Image (cartoon, rainbow, N blue to C red):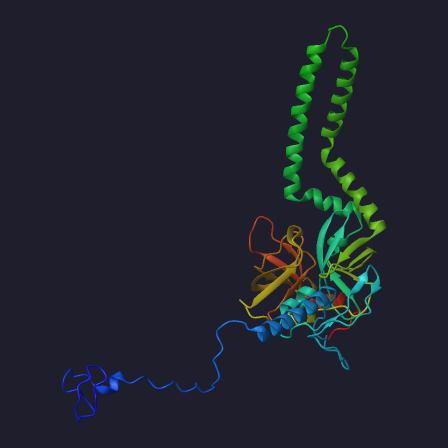
Length: 373
């Protein structure tokens, strides 16, 4: 055969004896076989199908969230026989003061007892301050402290004026009045005998006399102002706001005869309420939670432990180091499983971490119209 490269004639068909090239290397490569079809693995990330699915999920979440904004979750069933309420469901709240919503409620996640208890806690606004309360049954009865919704103006005024913080404010106001009186008396003496200042001198004399009158009975004036404010607000009632923003106005409460407790009922139905527990047999160091509106921070949850009991009989109190601040009064003291075992009522003045709650059993002893589970 002839070598395709150099033209050398030979009999060998594998390699040229003249130039040494292998004939197989000089042949054209065979045509590539068509590639066989096989699935291509998807690239990481979102394809069109995943984007559609994500959009659907997002839409459902937004829809559920928007419906959840308009409904307050129900609390656990109160344990009464024949109850068919599901404690993990949200119930329709009132659309406005005294108006009941008619739409179906969105379900609430099961297994969040503290959240259920928080949704059954209410913010109470009176003409002289803020407080808390909690819905204790599905008939929308609310428990709070008497001093939160008190309508006895003289009693409230005396308590406010005796408060150490108010005493400090009164002392500061007295000092400011004394300073103002001295300053205006110096000005009055400087104007004495100067022509054309008679009217100014008369006004100064009148102002100095008014300030001296206030200084003579500053605490009495404060008491009177507070008493009038409380009496006026007591006639018009107080307001209650739920977690979902629903507000009820012009409410009035009945008071316990022997303890700092009050009871009233919301003009609506299907309220979220807190499950009732037992304060007897609590373990020292057991985790407890308070829910309320300290310093106006509505529906705040704080935690502490059970520190012991104080007092005897109906005067028995639960001691805890869970923060109880102004605005927490009347709110629930609850266990980790969301059961209310006390009503937050006061802190020991001049200390930190020493708060007290009225046992929940006292609530049912004071208000016989309530059904104890």
